[in-house]
Length: 163
Image 1 (cartoon, rainbow, N blue to C red):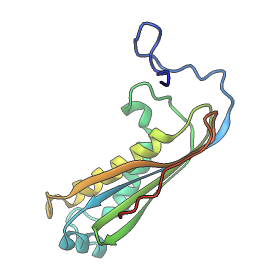
Image 2 (cartoon, rainbow, N blue to C red):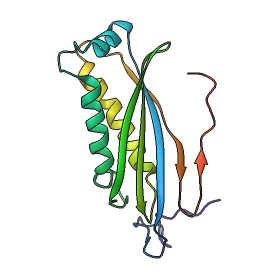
Image 3 (cartoon, one colour):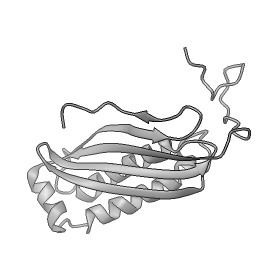
Image 4 (spheres, helix red, strand yellow):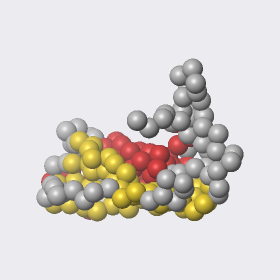
């Protein structure tokens, strides 16, 4: 079993000491999906949602969330992120939007949580901006797609057969 690094010998929570780790280039990509009715997707695509440009707002929210991850997730290190991008893929089947975030840093710890937080907040923002039209939207499949750098090396998630 892998030792949990966020616990001390007494089992108490602690922030991991990364001061002896090498500074390396690190990146992470994550994804999520917001499912919605076809009529709701039309509002998003045509820019006619009452709250404005859904994807532009969700992109900014996701980027801001990546930068604030350490304020939201206990024991995450504050990082000097060098790049944060949030992109969207509209889908007809299933109906909705795939959200993908990529975050990079030159540092002593990874950016997986920053990428996952960016995706989560971008998905929540899409929901918030469209909830007047479709309260039945669902957020799903938020996961790490890949990470590079650091002592543990690279990771790439298995491709999903569905969606």
